Image (cartoon, rainbow over all chains, first blue to last red; front, side, top):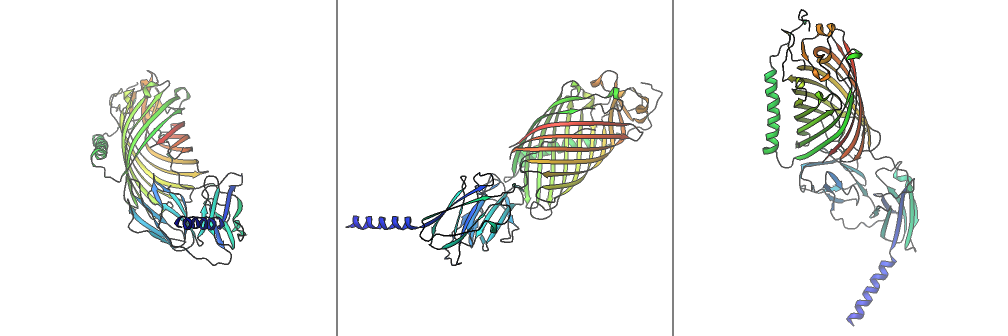
Length: 216
Length: 310
């Protein structure tokens, strides 16, 4: 009897999982190469969203770089910025979505930083000017980041219509121009594709400059 | 050398010993600090450079017959320590060694060891905040031709600002002092320290990142002070000089003269980042010196450098 109940539960769970809707996004650049670190966001077209519990997100500092460099979080998520370098960092952002500064520190900062407004937050370190990181603060819980293959999968989508858009740190033009409407009702898997025009990455150079001093 | 001719100035050498002590003190203090007292949470870095240069007027001579050009292989290594006492302040201490080996004029072959201390302050938060820095450097240069052996001191004050994420500019002033170790007068009553020099300069520099990897740079400077020019016997330069020494590096009939003059330099550079820790660099510099006695010389220097930082 117990075995029968167990098998029934497994079957129901598997059916529920298979019944979930998903958006499979493929992002390439204008040369057709896969684009990593693009954030794909699906916003319910009717605006009705039930926000899940937020858990702390960790953005690390390793070898004087933010790791991961691009992060996507849900609005209202606290972010912890541990410093795993053996030197101190001073993390800051001037972005309208979140202005903050963590005074020079090593190890764990005293408090996480709450990201309570949607938008893009650009991170920097006042000691190491080349350090740059990005946090995409999403108003929707349905988002995913592309991997090296340029693919991202947004799962657990309730059956309804969505406006799906893409953001990338080097995206030329606005995120709004990438909007696509899709209704996942009755479709387990919807495939969408974007070809983005990307700007060259601009950040303060880290590599050394060899100089020779002349004599008089 | 015609002993009847008298230079129009004699040179004061007072203070040379003090400067030499200052150079030694700076070098020793930094070495001791790095070995014994460097705080934790400081950042260590190690630089290695290798490359070459070509200087088309090593003699800094006016007359074409006296001009000598040559190429050299260059290597250098530095160990540095960076500490940020606050988010706005940074202190960098550096020990370095450099060497140049010339193809033809082996008397110019050089081994140099030096030290530097720099303090930098940022007036605000972020990479675009303006900054100011003070840099002190000291080095001991040992040439194969020992008439050039010397200690060098430089103090530099610089202010700068990143105008955009790609465009960085700075302005500065500097005072330099070269203390010749050897005094070999060849004309009675005239100093033999032709390589004992001092000067003050102002400079401006800019870099622009064309792409993530490619950076172009420019630097212009004006310096007033002592310069050294090596020529065969020459009445005009003899009258203008205040120190003279034989300079066998370029031949037994060459003499090094110390003059007062103004030097204008312009340098263009190109740097290709091979990775976050290495780069390939090219530069081309033109230097024109005009002495106060209407003597003038021009030199052009091209360099190629591979730089690594660990």
